[in-house]
Image 1 (cartoon, rainbow, N blue to C red):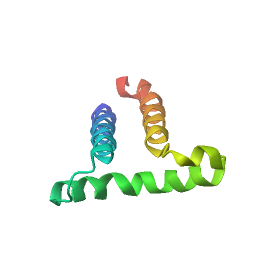
Image 2 (cartoon, rainbow, N blue to C red; image 1 turned 135 degrees about the horizontal axis):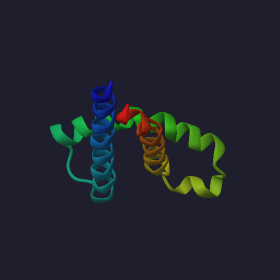
Image 3 (tube, rainbow, N blue to C red; image 1 turned 90 degrees about the horizontal axis):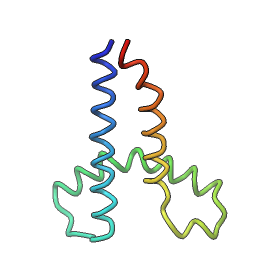
Length: 89
């Protein structure tokens, strides 16, 4: 059981790092290549539903910015905090 929660924690850490890379690359806008496409194929399926949810409930003044990565990091933190006591069982 401990190994399963350790694996989940590791995967969430890895996804968080990939999300950071995705955000930084969105500011730089490098040329499309296989690595950028792979990163987008991993990160965008998670960000797209969060983005749709935020567009539905955020005021239009705040929709100028994409808050989906921040919301995703908050969700990752929430899941990690929920699983952290279970990791030591």
